[in-house]
Length: 444
Image (cartoon, rainbow, N blue to C red; front, side, top):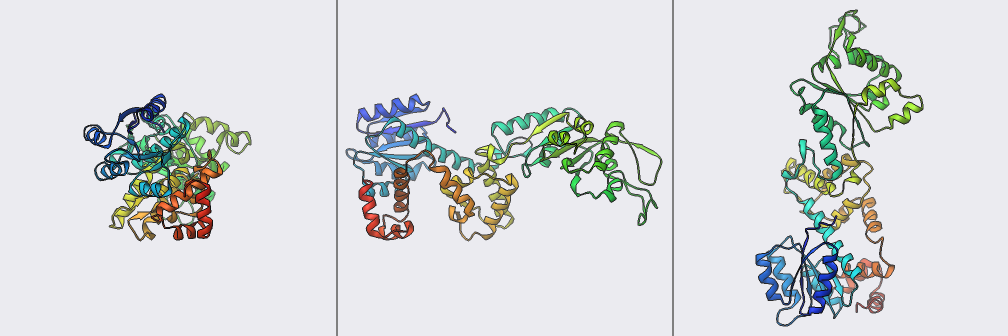
């Protein structure tokens, strides 16, 4: 998630500290500027936008807290990290309450510095993605800018230039029909019909009639002639969704019309010719079904001309937050409400969750949060337990137990305004135990 163009401003009255920060962060690919005072930093910020400010706590004249307040009042999107040689829990609480995203005590190693900087910038990237405007929509009205989706867009463009059959693979809920529509409506067939067909939903008893139509009197109840899906899609596109669930009978019927471009309506012996493009999709592994004898090999090769693989939502990085923002705006507008804002903790949870139901699951979640939400903010406590557990697992994977405990206690104290009684209640311990932990962890 690191952007090599990220700009960082380090503010400290110690030239040695500025040199250490600059050397470590420049070596990691960041653009680093330095200032020796709050006043100098203020003048610099008025002229140059930065992504992150690393400021000392105690400096002559104006201190780091004053710089934090100035930045929060004037540069809402800039992140702040506090460093100090005089660590105290009250100082950490005050800094975090005033807007510092992280707090690092001197002396620190280069690895510790980089770890905190990366953590802050990851949160910033998520927040920016989550609040992107709708013009951030990528090609074809599909939301997402990750490399995997860029590859999908490239294949959509190529497929749209031909009439070749297209096969779309991907897990359920990844948006296969959206891609199929993008291929159709960007092709020369856009003026003709796009007809979606769920193969698993067609009973064999209605199979031929649904696909190829029937003439009047063909069977009991056929009071009128009716065109089938292939004829409706003539000149356009038929989208065969979940073709992996197609019965052997349906597979045979599909192969016949794909080979000859001809069919007969039920109850008629007259052959009809169609020019229908076929786009097929499934969440199943068709090659494995072919090997198991459950899917016709000849049909597989007929549909498998151009393959477009859709990534799972968990593979798409910050696209998750762009989609979440889009759905929040959409459902809030539907309910004539202001769009709620998600906290950093809630965004972290969305980013780290596995999303087994993919985009469909994300959309359903955001719709529910907008419907049941009472306020302007969605916090991590509003999310399902499974998502809250996922952020707990993911956030601390490279930390020691003491570091995890320290971070958690600091966060709780900051959230309660240094109210130790309330913090002890949230932590599930008594005030005396909290006091002992603060002393042992060097926070008292």
